[in-house]
Image 1: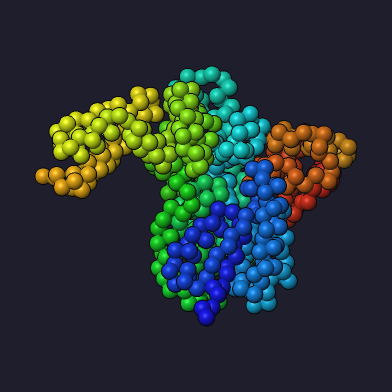
Image 2: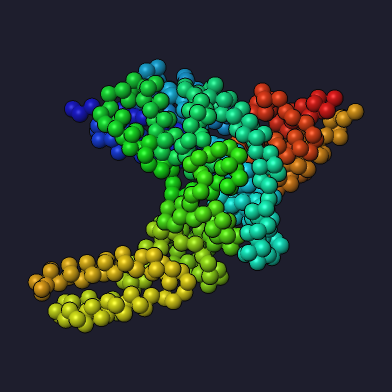
Length: 409
Length: 81
């Protein structure tokens, strides 16, 4: 009889999800363990998910009770103490290892962040859809003054962010929090953050660690765990993580004066990734936010694209009509383009021509199909970004048809 | 002399404005998790706003151990003395 797999339980936010993904991708670990992850953390509370989190706590409690003997490792994200998962050591089996890793959240290099419900109207839907997870409170204020983009940028860059937002005090508050969380965790992380903050990018946003920081968390977790000691490939995967971009494609831009004040060498004179497909200078990023390039319909469409693409596409078109500068989300954009192409009569004619062996006509229909994409801003910008990839995709599809039909040449 | 009665309404007003939270719901027993958006990062910002407004500086060992709005108000009274 095959032995049942041992279980590793993870409790925490997206940082725990990153650990879950890391472990699941290790074949040796995956062959011997199952992973169960539960969310009980402060950002969820902040997003108004209290009811769901209460259910999640109950689900965790039931799960642990039902699987007590199989849980070999319990990895909990440790926060500063306002939120807990409701489990005590006695809830777990005697042989279960418990590792509490410090939650990594830091905001002193982003003092302008309007993350979370604040006093701004835009946050009403930020709370729900997070379209402005990197929104900036000064930009929101300046938007109310109906400035031209040039005036906005001049006014915005004149703000003495370091003094106005007392970033040294904010840094101290971050340190106090970090040290307190460390004191209650299995291992500290703040010393690593303090020592490396100037030299290496450790955070992509306030609550998204970059590769080097995630790698350090993973290294420490293994160091303190018997269960993970003999997992083949663990250390090599940590090295890969160290050179990756950690969690999420989004990168919050660091204000040039903040980079200078804290001597953040990695943040000076560089561009920041916007959802992983576009790199922008701080000023370009600020303009994008000023234009509200990510709007509500887009955000809802992004969410909806996972479950209902036709409805998502409707929203996408509404967003394009309302805001000619709408932002693009790589995956959604590609799905949308693909969908548009598949519905495109010219593309269908191109395929039909290929089937008949009419290669020249097929190529002409294919060109027309690419040209016929809707001529709104979104389509045009997407096509500029992805035209080559799309053309290559279509040509590949055509050649596959030709080969399958034995009419290649 | 600054009293609790002086401090509490001002403190409640700062919290209410910052989190767009109904001021009538704020009592001395209100805790951070009850207020939408009051997570640990927002806590650093609200603490700075309170420090600015009352011209005080909270001691390090108090800032993340405070349990409710009443404790915050009482600490402000102490620091103003």
